[in-house]
Length: 225
Ligand SMILES: C[S@@+](CC[C@H](N)C(=O)[O-])C[C@H]1O[C@@H](n2cnc3c(N)ncnc32)[C@H](O)[C@@H]1O
Image (cartoon, rainbow, N blue to C red; front, top):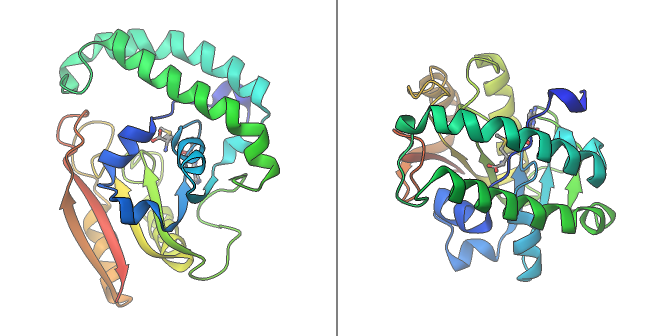
């Protein structure tokens, strides 16, 4: 993985809460954040006394490298968002500028926590479909804006392996969004749900209050039977 090819873009704690309908009870669970990148969820939850480990391939880089890349990517992403404003719902964020500020604040929160978190083993360099954790080590695994969203880049077999791995390490898995980058439902969703059901797991599509990308109204919840 080369730094110039990564697009670090992380969401806030408040966004994660809405994205995954996280209750106070959920926040007391042992949580895995898979593909968390520079999101602020780990930093904020840890500060609130929560138990969380985040994994992401970009954790091979140090804070200075990620900080530099975030600054470059910000200047590329903001004009792209302006050009595609009609693909998003502008209620939580009133403008592209406000969205940019929320995301940069979240990523600054992550960067401030990153070195200490790495030292404490809260930011672990790893990639689906192989996670360095024991069976059922976590109560809850969350995967925001990676699986299903990148359906064109991550094929069906990789989705199947990734979801099996998440279900191996956690008793419950929540994934959002379920639509791909083009705004249509992921072509992998139905097959993945059927495969998980065949493995004896319970799958459901659950409405969430978070809305930004048009059509991204539900999360996938998978639970051990
Ligand atoms: C769009 S970002 C989402 C970041 C964060 N989850 C959020 O919602 O703000 C997608 C993340 O998936 C990570 N990723 C890419 N390939 C991965 C893999 N094989 N396993 C786990 N994470 C991966 C990327 O490095 C990136 O941080």
